[in-house]
Length: 159
Image (cartoon, rainbow, N blue to C red):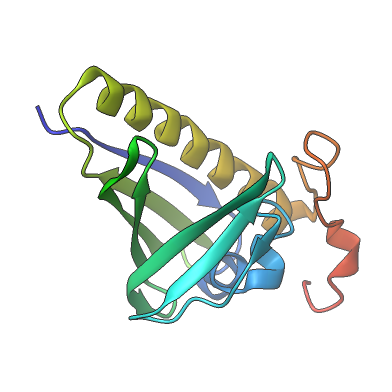
């Protein structure tokens, strides 16, 4: 059994804007993370989340192709024994929209690995829907559901 999943969401904005919503740390922290450092291929970005005040997540960027792909590995929720791998693909759709596909794989074939994969699948689907609301309408769906999320009105260059 290969523990792997893919989620996808169509966002009604051009690929440049959608890619920037993930690659730009200020925008990523407007709907997903509490803080984020810049993503550069071959380097490690740091993400923090408002739900976990003391946790820093190391995101090891393996590939970054503007307007096309962000690929990284990070520590499995099961512990430091191994990494899972994530690819976020950005595909132009009908000239005005973007199809975002997120795939993650690499869990151990155990009940704990299966449970972790389910949790991450839910998390990525939630992230894409929050991104859709943020990019299309300037709405932060996570605002007030978790502490310290930025307000989308703070982004003067967004629209």
